[in-house]
Every structure is written in C-alpha cells, then in structure tokens.
Image 1 (cartoon, rainbow, N blue to C red):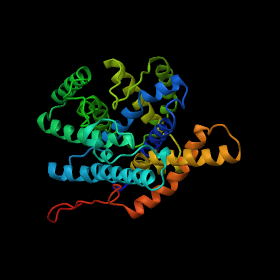
Image 2 (image 1 turned 90 degrees about the horizontal axis):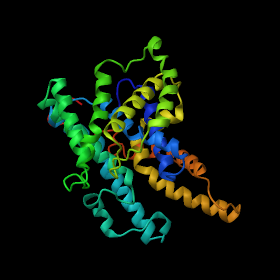
Image 3 (image 1 turned 60 degrees about the vertical axis):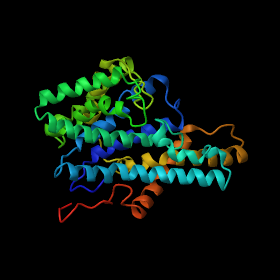
Image 4 (image 1 turned 30 degrees about the vertical axis):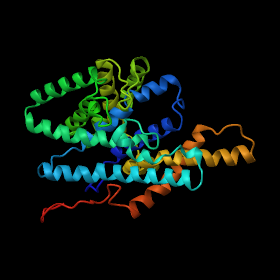
Length: 342
C-alpha cells in the first residue's frame, strides 16, 4: 500500500502471518493436519477483511475514495493478472512447460466468465476487497447511525449467505462475498474507531494469554470458511468464532517483537499475493529436478518448497516495488484531479 506516516509493525506482522498461512495452503491443501487446517481456515480470510477495515477511510469524497482504491487494489489486480497470463503463455508456447499449467488464449477471459481461474486463483480476493470497500462507503452514506447501519449489514449478510447459490450471487463478480465478508471489515473499522490501534502495555500484555483459550475454542468449534467456492458454515460459526479468533490474534500480535522477514512480507503482502502461485510452480519443478534426479528423493517436501518460495519472495518483492511501484500500490498511477493534495 501507499506509504503512511507511521507504520504499525504489529499489523504488518499480522498481514505477514496471514499471507504465509495462505502460501503454505496453496502449496498443498493438506500441508497442515486436518484440525489445524480447519482452525486456520476459520479466521485466515476473515482476518484479511478485518485488516482492510482497520485502514478504511472516506478521504475527500467518493471520487477521491474510488480513485485511491482503484490505485491500491484494481491496478495491482490487473497488473498481476496480466503478468500471470504472460508467464503462463510464454511457458506453455515457448518452452512447453506443461508443469506450469495448461494455457489457452481464452484464459484471458476467465476473470469475466468464472469464479475460479486456474492460473492465479488468489487474485479473486482483490476484486472482492474493492467491492467491499465501495459497498461499505455507500452504506455509511445511506445509514450514518450505527444501529441502522449494522442492522442493514447483518440483513444483507444473511441474504447473501442463504441465497448465495442463486445466479445473481454465483458469478465471477463475487457479489456474495461483499456482504458475507462485510461484518469482518466492519469489525476492523470499529477497532480503529474505538482507539484500539495504539499499543497499551498494561492492557495489551494480557493478549499473550488470551490465545490459549481461543486456540482451544478453535480446536473444537472451527469450521471451514472458503468464500471463493462458497463453502461457509452456519451463521454463528461463520461470524462468532472468527470474530473471537481475529480479535484475539490482533490482541496477541500487539505483544510480538519485530520479526523482520514476516513484517517485510506483511508490508508488501499484495506482491506476495500476486506472485506466490507462479513461484510455487517454479520452485516445485526446480526442486523435483534437482532432488529427484540427483539425490534420488522420491518426493519434494512441501515445507521445503515453502521455504524456497519465501526466500524467492524476498528477492521478488524489492524488484517489483522498484520497477513497478505504480502497479504494486506503492505509488499512485491515477493522480487526483486538479490541484488536490495526495
């Protein structure tokens, strides 16, 4: 995202942990033990919406708001989508790299035709996030009172959850995720509104203990949440359990010391989101050729691939933000009209 005057490193830590959980899952969706996987899935994506809500601002009216969100979300989406398409196309036609994934020219149209495009599926989140931001802005203007606003959001969430298989929701616009995910987004915005972002040593230290009972709760009560494939549990497990887990992780993270690799990846998580699928496929193929052909290993350990992908991201991130700052949300591509300030 664009630079801020003072970064909250614990938020970068949260973002970093979240994207690392996602990278590991995308290497192999069985990489975690089953119960641990359910625990992580129950709050992993809700945490991302929560963090986005933490930084929600109305700026100088809707035009300025939309311009900033377009720069920070849609421009990276288009850039990483085109980058992935080009990489797959070149790998398929120039090098016959079948391991990268089958490619056809019609794949360029997949984002407009299907919810799930095989070449860089995680990018769906950016479209959903942009829509959540815009929808929440509109709801704020329609319902300035908190009570009315929350009632409307809960109603829309209920409707989207129970009618998500209808054609109006089951499409690549991810309309269902806008309203199903909005309560998590609102939670983040309310945490900010109530002044909970600055650290408070006397109060925050209890966050080190709160994760223990919450982990026990998650172990017994967590359920799979996948907003892409429209797999959501019952209403209370979709919201109550993730709400508790997200707030506990937020509280816990405020006590964490600086972890340079995690905070660095969290700070530029949008680059990791856009590139990790490509790197996973490249690293898996390279490791299989090196280990299987030369060391006679029968399989490549998923966690070894994970380590190599993380190491590669430490190189890819600086390159991307230096060469393409306006396409990776570091600088604005579309400037404000007139002489308005940034």
